[in-house]
Image (cartoon, rainbow, N blue to C red):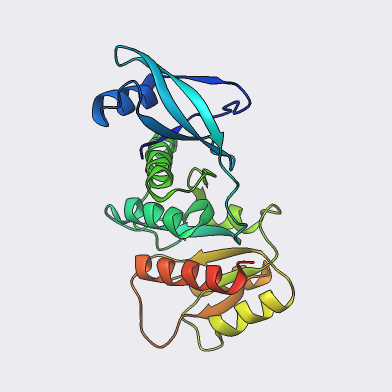
Length: 246
């Protein structure tokens, strides 16, 4: 069934009006017609089963609300803070991170980040990644649209007070603790929110490791195998979901 994103949808209404890009994609690309079913989600956790009752070319359509769907089971709230990798790897990471359940993605510029962006480029990249996140939500059935922020400097990120207190830095340092132990301790303490901090291809600098520890991040190892950035992301998110989901 096609899924359509309608922000601030009023599922208490009998009919929803959809226009713009969402309507065009549904009518032109997915070729929905009057009588077809369509699942609508609002990006805030709610969804409903609807049916197309009328269309106006490819610019708009009216959907009759047939059934409000039950909320998805609660899952761990996972924030991914990631040094932007080179090439198009960030697109893949955003897509798969959303599919695995990340609720927020914070792109970072670290000392060894190869990608350098001005303000205009940062805004454009963030908008592209948000579209990727939305498409991932449509495809995998996630009803809460993750927040994808604009890239920010690593030093400013470490000063933030609005991030979870369970702070894990995926680290290649001798004193890194096993991820399994850190997550088990978090679960035992009843934690359901976590932030995963992952560095660039060239790793964090010694000064960046020290700054993260001072900001409350636990250096945590992912095992003896050196992983590519995207592989580290997928492994860390999957492990966090397994350990912290209700």
